[in-house]
Amino acid sequence: MVNFNGTLHDSSSHLLSIENRGYAYGDALFETLKVVHGKVLFWEDHYFRLMASMRIMRMEIPMNFTMEFLESEILKTIEANHLSKATVRVRVNVHRIEGGKYGPISNDINYNMVAERIEADFYTLNEAPYTVELYKDFYVAPGLLSTLKHNNKSINVLGSIFAKENKFDNCLLLNTNKTVVEALNGNLFLVKNRAIKTPPLTEGCLKGIMRKQLMELIEKLEGYTLEEAPISPFELQKADELFITNVITGIQPITRYRKKDFTTEVSQLLLERLNTKIRLS
Image (cartoon, helix red, strand yellow):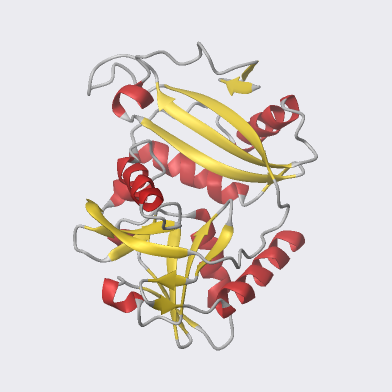
């Protein structure tokens, strides 16, 4: 079942036309949520990121788009798909209504929600080999738009094809300044000695929800320091540990980059703290 503007439909067919601005111009935003047995993880952070992104995109925020309303719509969608007692991935899509060319005729929006079952209730550490490479065919532009979850994801799509063709598990993206920004599907953290570094938003990385959660945990981690600073490609092979974060996977350790193998000690420690935080919230 698909939720389109609050109405449930059996299928997504015939809901979006070829004139849809998300399709025609990438004039759309989305949020990817993890919902565990009816509890939306980090819902407040997701909600405020979506509202801030809509303002940046000059979309009209409906009066009824409260945190409570959208959460109830998410849970309604999950229930309609008989997934209330499961762990679910929900994608909330917001697009400007049809009309106009580059210049829209209105800033009003439509929204839709889709849900699918996923396996793990809590976050687990994938300790299987996980190899990455730099993707250098195209570069991320530093700036505010790059921090949004919008539908202009051509670099991520092409990077994913490159990774598959070359048998990598993921790729790291560079910005136009040739510093490392993030992975194809999440934010990047680098550990060297007891210092943990992640690129600042000004580098063009996604304003990740899991990034925010882990930064809060790292700041409370005794014996470790956290720094938001650009990461040079030369730093990757000197690191002790690299890991990728997103709200669905949690923490994905990188085990190998080129000829360098990495440990997973900090990843394991943070994952334990993350699951504890979720249980207590």
